[in-house]
Length: 192
Image (cartoon, rainbow, N blue to C red):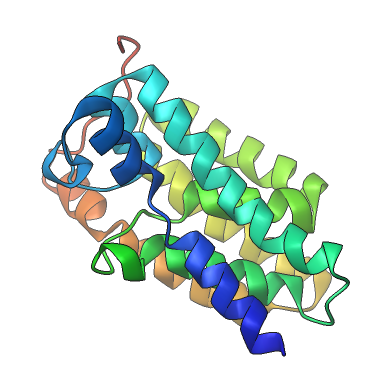
């Protein structure tokens, strides 16, 4: 029975709001614009604030809904693992050729249901990293690092969050390469 919740979470995570928003509201494909990444940041950078916020909200909601459903039905399942499948779906969506986002917004949606205080602490920390460095990808990667240190304090899920750091590094490999080559864009104030 657990497998049903994991598959459902993966399916929900696989819904690409960036692709949907770019197609229906801008008659384009986000995967051909900017960094080519179908996520909230690239949508914001290429299609403007409204489109970026729509994608952010959609990606947050799918992560939260993936956990709210088994909670509602009182399913005997590990919610953290259910959330992981939603995040994997977001990063490697079956509906879009396994070309997905970089885990940040969907992870936030998962954490908001799993542990709201942890979500607040993690994303405040990530925001601080972005404000200090002016690089979004550094804040994104710091999410994994913060969660890993939390797992060390908790004394459980260390391997789980260690693997999550590796996933974030893999997903942000182009950002890291661009940063090393001096090509990674810093955040700017002027958006549509």
